[in-house]
Length: 382
Image 1 (cartoon, rainbow, N blue to C red):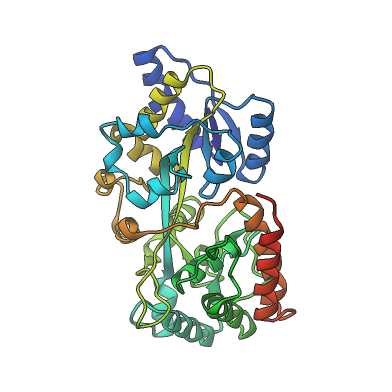
Image 2: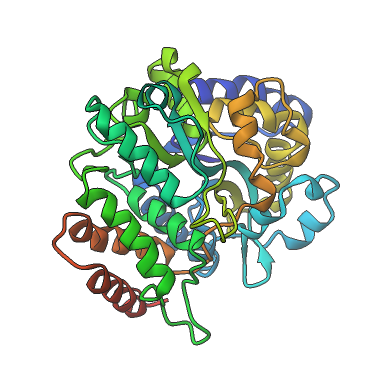
């Protein structure tokens, strides 16, 4: 099996608490391979092309369609339908594992992203209620800016990967955006696209966000470090604090899923990691047995905890380790949506990230950026 981004604690837990009893009960000896997230997709696609994929692979939130469309994943639709625990998974997260009507993976861990805040900084700024709308999110940042104690009130997830694209995607979906029209053409140059990008870019141009604030993926994230006070994220930020600055954990609060304005509906957005079986496995029954063992009720709760995510199952929402912060995040899980599946998604994410950069720096207009995004997406071969 291939694990991505696994810490030493995770690997120890997997070997001692998961795979050792699995071997004892089934006779299967499971070898773990590891990779960081940055190199993982290229590694998986290269292995798929040479028919050397591990039997079971951990894949990211937007990877199902790119891999399934290339024939790299085993169709598990019928197996899942016959599994007596399948109905415990959140519907939207199962849908995130589908492509063209077939199921190719089982959700493993999730994070439902909305507003997360440093309550101590908000208290100092005189903010008494957590934001529910974009305007309130901005007003909160303006109050924090007046303190003059943080580098940038808002952290939009700008990093060396596609963090800012994920933030833009959340805003776009909250504005009611649809990625494609009925003919499959990208339609970011639209009213939802303009509203969401104007809001995002406006925070940079007005000094509420800073394009020099880049998370390098190691150490404390900006909100945990106190260089920002609010962001679009979820339970992963608490895991980051526990790992790097435990004293900050008590100051982190999760707010409600944001809505564009008072007349809109709140829109939580989920990122779902999942396990999939290689289409070239020589033992699909054994791989399925391991897959259901990992994602079953008995093992998944603790495994999600050490992996820094939340269990994507309704019956695990009240695990002992799930505190008030995690419960606030999971409150939105039943209604969470994801980015639409697309075989090109692994190219689309970096392309949008690249085109957002000049916009947040004031070097390209909102309209120019959205038109460029549509043109770039439509030029990518499926």
